[in-house]
Image (cartoon, rainbow, N blue to C red):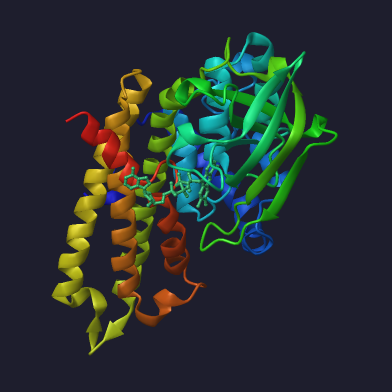
Length: 385
Ligand SMILES: Cc1cc2nc3c(=O)[nH]c(=O)nc-3n(C[C@H](O)[C@H](O)[C@H](O)COP(=O)(O)OP(=O)(O)OC[C@H]3O[C@@H](n4cnc5c(N)ncnc54)[C@H](O)[C@@H]3O)c2cc1C
């Protein structure tokens, strides 16, 4: 049984209906615009709102906060369909799987009521701003500060590489409320950009190797005032702990997209090598092709089993940081290897961006870098040895 027929053990009728509905939605509302989105460097705001109306945003947020009332499997199904359709660059994973879950886990009742329903409808687009020009991997060293002044926090600093950075109107900013402390000085402060009058600017939409339709930006904070009630969590200094608790889910979302990309690359390649001929036979008829594809199908199947297992652990509240790190580094490493090898079977066509495999090659590379680089993942695993 090859990958197309594989059904995870967690699949059920309801999730299959969600898969079918997502596929229909993506075909009608996303695919016709995807070339334009790639060129303009971001998805239309309208695309987000349509996704919200169709129930594709915040699928794993409880219904009482406007979400779909599902769990991680629902996010997985949606992420997989976006990946299969080559429109994964739309930052739904960051929005629904990460930012909304920070609010759900640490927000006050008032914050949840205020933001989550609008995130589910697509009226609000979420981003998380951790990385700074001077620090990415070493999160404790962030320099952006959020200093309490009366009923406000005054935020100053700079962030970079922020996904959804051009469109986001709710940004979870990782800042130091106590610059003298390392991890203990970190807090998460929500910035509602629509309410800002001064002190906040977006930099340019950064030109990237891949993920062309995703807006990725620098953000500048210059004595930006936000209400003190925008702190996430009951008190200052909890930010690092909150990040560590949520990062396994973020890493698993990356692993889900990695394994889905592998499956897609293998399907595209299998179709191609059955059609294309050289030396009077199909490319598939060369034993080199057969063996290489056999190896890569096996790896994709192993990756799928591991990711499915991690998803079950996550839903049981048992996905530990080291296991999530294993899933993130290994699946993204394999994604890059599989896509590289698949591209080779396309010959020169594989290098042409009109062929999806070429775009997949470019999109894949960042998977080993963001969400915590793969070297950092190995450090997390090694700490447990
Ligand atoms: C397309 C894209 C989207 C992104 N989206 C977001 C986002 O939405 N929000 C956000 O906050 N960030 C985002 N990022 C940033 C991303 O998370 C960081 O780039 C990443 O964490 C690495 O940080 P850095 O770039 O500062 O590299 P550095 O930390 O400078 O690392 C450079 C290299 O050194 C290695 N290295 C660092 N420390 C060690 C160590 N102790 N041992 C061994 N090797 C080490 C790293 O693995 C890496 O290979 C995004 C990045 C990209 C490219």
